[in-house]
Length: 545
Image (cartoon, rainbow, N blue to C red):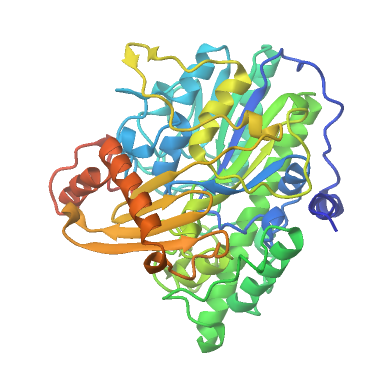
């Protein structure tokens, strides 16, 4: 069965088709398309149904079946750094977003996407998590509802600086007792988009859900769908996902094998009964969070259909990084005996064992620059502007590319000078030609997160580490992704010329963006000196999630 047929069948069985109607020459609100960026938080590479996951995601599957899915999209392996690049089109180091929230994304030589779209006549709306500087209302957004920093699902018990919900007036929002963020953010998105449509304005909506970031918390009705689903364990889960991905055509078993378990991720049959039960329950909550997110995305898509603007809406869906291994092998499991696992009274993190399974079939997880930390699928749905193909797109792209893609779609130019700032040239490139079927072209991406560093092109991937001040180094590892997409065989000793070439590129990039220099400054702050930046009232370490 072809990929699109597989996805359409699965989506139709669960939710019914949401196929777009015939494309209009121009949308009901004019020639400018609405722009919707949906960002998941800490989503595993293969979590969505269209990527082989167990959770029911019929609405995302339908978008994938009628859109373009780039399976090699690079992110910055961490929440705030990825969001900084997404909003600026620049490497995150250029805005000092190298850890938690970092510096301001719209000062110096950078600008925020919302600023340009606002100036082009768009209604600019943020619904969800921000996690970068400055406040969104100071970065071009006209509407903001959500969490400035950490993830929150149920009504916060402590409406403090990390969980406060802000409305468009910059005041604490009224939160009912049955509040659940994934639903509430969608409610706000629909109401705000409706206002824009009624005013005959295109909208730019940044819908940044927390799911499935820790603490793992979900509605009981959603958890019930998956309770018992993971009793066979993480090894079986990895194998099943890998087989589904092979059937979908995502992986080629000849060149993309299922890697061995990572250090800190034991085989399932070595666990005791309690470890097995807790891990299975944890995975059920993750699936429930994915399920609810898809349900709410479907509700927003239904709204677009009712307003007759779905065909004139450019939609992106991606994750800011891979699954999170925070909390050690089994994660943090803080759940009173009287509380339901996944409820507002439980505080659970994913942990290494579950993260490795959620990132199948890539190596490692969030905060590393191995592929499981810094790779996401990028789903793009834009009726009439995409060439339908029967395979997933292998072109190398980056979250940096979303900014210029949105500008081109909206008919906006990226200025050299903006509001007294001389802007740095964009590091990303528009994917509009790629959506029409053109090749993205050869590209090289360098990256740094804390001590981790990497260089990546369409064939080769180098991973390494450098300690603060460059005093100690972990030698470069080299992987030939054309035959080893899973980074299982280090071939650095066999290709010293490639190592030298790519290392030189990293050195040039490092000097340009000050990557290791900023890491040194971060280490100094971690050692107890006063932080340089204040992030929406919090210091940068509090935002380092």
